[in-house]
Length: 134
Image 1 (tube, rainbow, N blue to C red):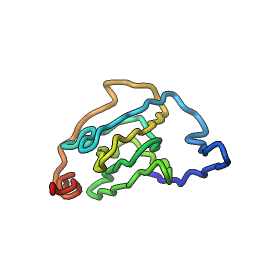
Image 2: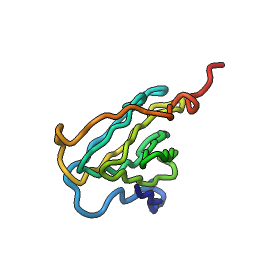
Image 3: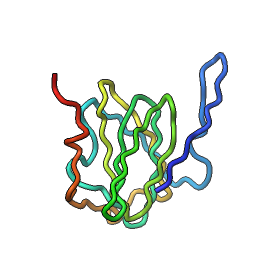
Image 4: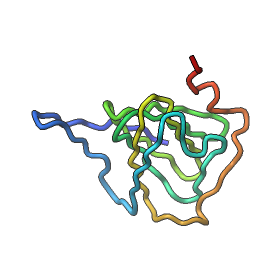
């Protein structure tokens, strides 16, 4: 995996950042409601595709599993960075905040259902990360 801070260009109109430069085969946008995510109980894994996750609104958490190690990235649209998940690395995203959140996901290859799989989350869970009810 790679994490890269993205330079923000600001002026009186607002701001922009260059999300990705290079070879892009496909990009998609994921919007997630508070308390929800994608593959919260299992790892999503690609055999060949690399994906770069970039926050464009709100805050999300991205968990990445490399071997036995899990790294959780806090993705925040106010301080954008792109995190690239490489082939063979498990990943899961969760919106642990109180507002909807949106991610741009940039892929180095097109969608291929035979390239993706799911693996059980062994010895790791989103449960400790979830906000406690009041």
